[in-house]
Length: 348
Ligand SMILES: Cc1cc2nc3c(=O)[nH]c(=O)nc-3n(C[C@H](O)[C@H](O)[C@H](O)COP(=O)(O)OP(=O)(O)OC[C@H]3O[C@@H](n4cnc5c(N)ncnc54)[C@H](O)[C@@H]3O)c2cc1C
Image (cartoon, rainbow, N blue to C red; front, side):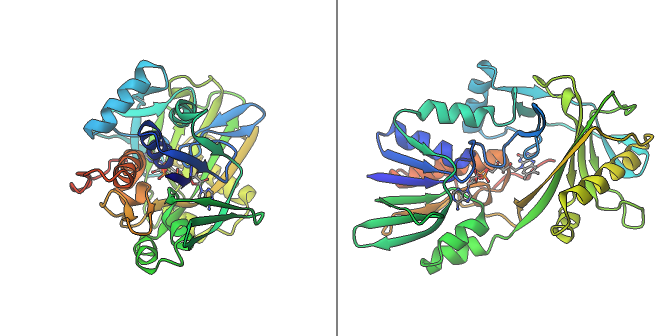
């Protein structure tokens, strides 16, 4: 069997590694130049990077715990214990009670994804910068067509991509198309702002939920000082994530305008005197978070040899993406999988 996995995020790479270990021939295709998907540290200015996607992740499931422990032992993941506050009113930072241990990739958020890609390199073909625009079932298997019109043939296909992208690719398979379409995803703006000097802000990270009647309401959902994460350089970079509703209603704004608004909201939330950043980089994640994700592990049609996996199939978030990749591989290998346990509520 030659399986194509579209998507080199955590779910796709996890699935690829299990299939590879079972001696299945695998090709992974991704439109981005680097693996990791939404678990990503991106270049923001010069050689500076920031975690524009995943900010940290939690570990609960036994299988994920084992994997994360291995990454920790090899220096690819570390725990992060920021001084974390809740901000409900501008300038009012309250210490919250946060029980779970946060983890981050080190030295970049996508270090674990790069490790997964390396672990299969040589046997699994990983084709970056290839966007797949259509998949067609033929009598001989699957034909994948990329944006240049190039076609490749496979026996099985896994869509390890966000649900709206999966729904589009599954247009010719109505029952799977309907399941993927039932999980819309919200956009999220992420902004990294670089400052010449350390700002007078007395916490490392904040959950921000500014009430509706205040100025800057809904603009920010999260802010953190990147240098507080293990393995990061000491540059003063603040990472800002916008609220989902605000992101949705500003999805057509320019990155420059969004960056400016988010930096203003940051100073207001922290009640710090505004300072001009030396660089601002804003990025829109069009499909950031699934609304009402499934708890099914993955979608699979055994007869057609096509499936879909990703965070949206397994309760969302990094851990869900990993478990969904495992579930997908198990289904393709015809193994029993017990992934139908209720998804665990996620702490932010
Ligand atoms: C701003 C933001 C903050 C987040 N914060 C957290 C957090 O704090 N904690 C947490 O646990 N999770 C967080 N998440 C969610 C987490 O990043 C995801 O749950 C996880 O990375 C999803 O992995 P995945 O493999 O399912 O999908 P993805 O990472 O989205 O991977 C999909 C891959 O498919 C590729 N692709 C898509 N369509 C195509 C196509 N047609 N052809 C080729 N390639 C394609 C993409 O390039 C991508 O690499 C956050 C996400 C965002 C956006």
